[in-house]
Length: 625
Image 1: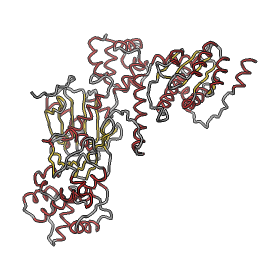
Image 2: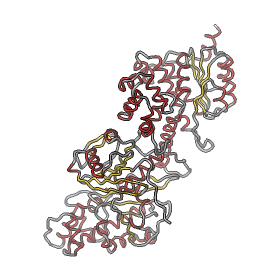
Image 3: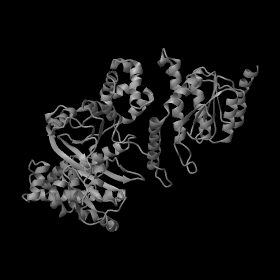
Image 4: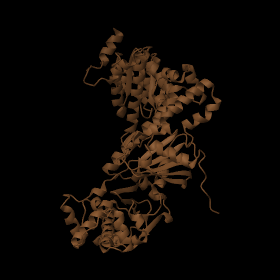
């Protein structure tokens, strides 16, 4: 008995593929189950919000929680300006106006690449032989208005898409006919790329070139007219034009296959080839694909497919949206969904705070409590009660979780750096791992410990920073930042100096100990000496370490790295982030009447106010004198 996918508990998901001419919509009722597919003309609407609302009205849906949109445009941030249509919009503003919990906007070719693994045998047509190798690179070509080139690349724990401008590589003729076409192009274009010929405009250009070669006056035909005449066989030049197009596409596809090592296959999408149907099976494409001299046997094993799914981008957008929602700490039930559900159980005053958060979450995220209370027309204690009604310790804890749910991008994940990685792999992994660790810290940091540590540092008569090894540079950075507050500060990375200085501390002094493991015996002895002298100790370390248990306040950093093989890099970045958080917190407490001025004390450039750190000798003479 076949099992059917279970419907999403939070209702259908909205999927869209928006181009310059048409906007295609669907509701995904369950994984891979699309319903209510509609195609609306973009010319009939003023913008993305209008066309989306029109679709929802047409299918009789009041609202959805989660949406993913593929758009024929680069996506580089919140503001999107469409290239081939005069639509400009903010992604977050669209999310708010459509009352969505989640809105992802991705490039359409990225969505198409992500769809490849989700296509079944009925949604693709194999051309020629070959079998795909598991966990291998998959190549993608999309001849249409231009020539899109991409790939799907397996990593340790996920698949990533390749951003490419491969359509602009130089065109390489393979026979005398293609040389004639190239000579014709050279009269007008100093550089002829693959996209110049293997595209809709390229079909028209090839038709004119072959007509001139045969001494036949070309008719003013568009690409679709040329293809239709070739399919019916009514015009010999059109037939030859289509054959030439398919042969040139075979060359480009084989070049992509050997360049990427695409043993997972090459897929053909776009708006031209899928319309050719069985005609493409008998075209010169596959013979040209395998005509690679010594690499003919290699390419004969690489399968080639035409994407026949009517709306392939839906599969890719669905996969990207599902990955994003799975990556949330709260699963499919996000914080904003939780707030909506909790509404009837809140007091009337708390409901006003709830309505403000749902209407303007990013504003709430950035505003202080006094401004949130003013906009919701409630008291500040009501804002705190609202947060606690949802299970949070307070406003800071609530804001941290709210921030983690508002991202409009695919979540970054950890990938282990390995021996033999290329320079691009190393760059990508180190940056992604660092970003992932910072986001995880943002969601898990102990806000109460941050507040307590900030208060201790604000009241400190003197601050000393102890660290050894890789963490020593963090202690020096902290000394520089806190010296701006005109508080006596010193950083020690020598364990003997740490113990001697700790014995000279007094009540009102604070020691900040920075250690990845929290286990070095000398650091622990320094902590014991400092506390015996009456000083308070703040530990930035692993939450269950001996150092964390001894300290007055422990800020847990539990990021794990392979210290036996690689230098501990990310832990150092997280330690620096925590120092910045504490410094900004102290600045705000110091400058309650004018916080901007206090923050500027930290933001001064390194060369603006040079200083000499206090020496151990001056410290000793100060205490004993």
